[in-house]
Image 1 (cartoon, rainbow, N blue to C red):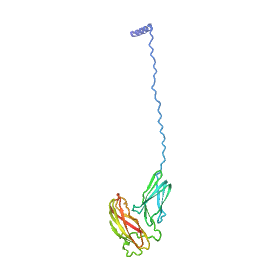
Image 2: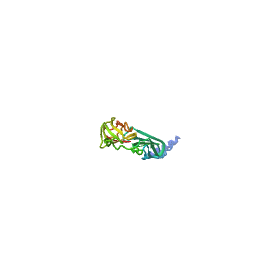
Image 3: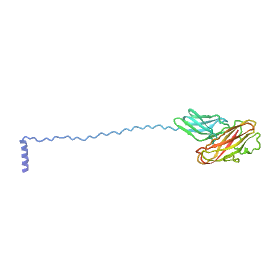
Image 4: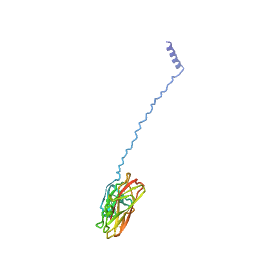
Length: 272
């Protein structure tokens, strides 16, 4: 009971003094703003570039071979210009030639002119250029024929001709000497060589015919050490001999820095 009176008196006293009860302001509750979701960045669609096929060389061949010309043919998958490199003999690097065609074409035809009759030629590189380049490195070997009945071969080798007993009406070849050795049974020259060395051998050729002849030489590498193809230079590949006369032909094989050390076996063919 005592607590109730005290509370009543307290309220009356407040009214008596003219005091108004304090008004507590209502503070609005502000909820935190939720950020709107950021849309994912749009990834641009990648456009795949069309694949460009590399330039290729195919169907390489030699046609229309005569005693002084030949035609090299091949195909490319796109238009391109071309350069053909060729040389006399499979082994010799003395006479190296090139023919260029600046036309942008797909079916290629290059004519090799002024070839020697009854000779071996090797096409060792074809380069084509369009938007990119391509090379054909396989060696392509072909032989030019004799130009009619006035041409004849002295033989696949020369050993048998060194034993000829008569020069009358014949063309004979006799091995004189030089580095290495000559085997008349196998018609081959064997020599031991080092890089950057030069080796030579000599032959005497007699013309027993009743007219001037020109003797052409073709050299072929039969075997060499493992490790790469040997290259050589022949100091002479042809010689003119009047009727009833003899001429000496010296053959010098100059080996390059990259030629492997070892025994080289080569053979020579003389044609007229």
